[in-house]
Image (cartoon, rainbow, N blue to C red; front, side):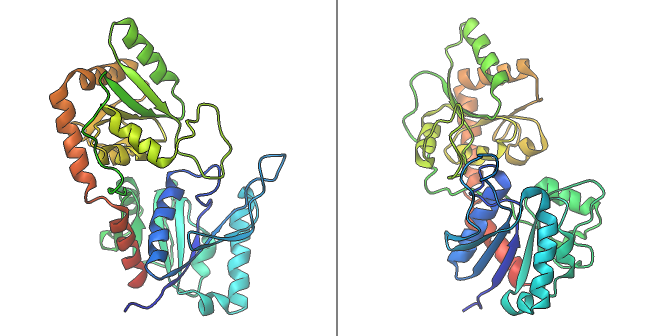
Length: 342
């Protein structure tokens, strides 16, 4: 039986924060599974809410999904608070005495404070700011790259290829099963933070006589986020059911990771040709990409998928096939393997 690992993890936000996004979703999906395998995880982030009437103040300490949550300071003081926190733990002998490894979730710049830790450090990199070299002083230990883009950035910053572990975003394929029954009329489901361009394009298709129905969903929000205008208010299960009923999907800027769940439901996906879009969609294989802001290109892709059943079936089948191995369980195993081999 493997020994229990005690993990001290630093991530700017936690997944319950109303501003949480794809990074926090990744960290929660991975480490809730690691905890489920008998390990201990303490997640340190900044506080939220309670200022200027912006929602209920977050608890300083709580346990959610068997993860110990600790929130210190406000967002702008996060790095300073983490430096103070690590120094105090070291002074009292509680860092090495309580934990086996520090995990630094990097989306921009790594925490300088973790360089002084007297236990191994594992960076999980989502993206690097320019001229940033992660965890200087801790290499040549392993570094986890959550995306292909992060992997390339790490290599450009001088991290040896042999030290990089690519643990990509995943999906839970069990609830994401395709449906044999789809909407009778052409319908596509869209997840978009700023759907102005999409709505304009759909309006133009109707003027051109295309019978295309849009099912617009707001991005999935934190369980503690207040309702926002346009929110569907639907549960995850209801969202997946709407995916299953659609003919194809669309993911707007900042929502590209949702393409994995759509693909697992057997949907081809239209997405902007950004770095994130290329991360989750392979053009011509699992979906179609268009240049951001190119309304004509977007309209053409919507038309093609609405009218071409063979194209829809080919892209959707390949998207479904690829998600069968791109699971959160596999990603958690890769991250846990890196932790155990430090």
